[in-house]
Length: 167
Image (cartoon, rainbow, N blue to C red; front, side, top):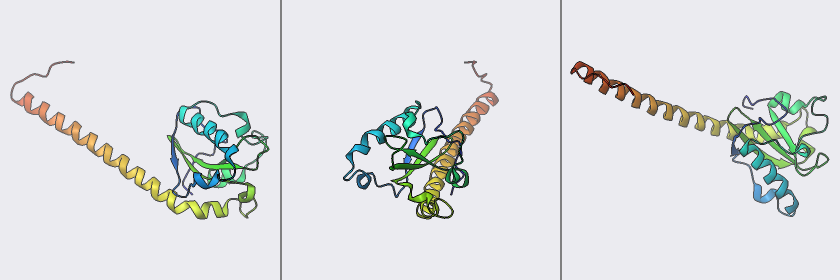
């Protein structure tokens, strides 16, 4: 999987939320409308950079190992209570979070943990992140071109004897 952060908690800053191409919110809540409110609580907390509800994190978060988070960078949050079997799986990066899916604890029963989760999401999420990197590079290129044009105009003015004004 991509190199996601392995901190067991969501960063306390606003993060952009990206949905994996396989994220099917409509299916997750079918027959389980009680999950929508805790999902929205988590979604808004991540988006706004506010602390997540304590029930969203696993019990003993500071004293037990999470092999899936350590190995693959895939975090899981509980929907509704710490004892909830419904989990939100996600990847946390510096500026955004990618929501993978809502499922149960079955991903911890594979050897190694998360094998199916990684297999399902890895290629699509990597392709999407490559697309994001291309967009960012293009935006950076446009800014650099704009700065070069401004420098060119300034140099042309200096050569013509026009002194630039201080801002």
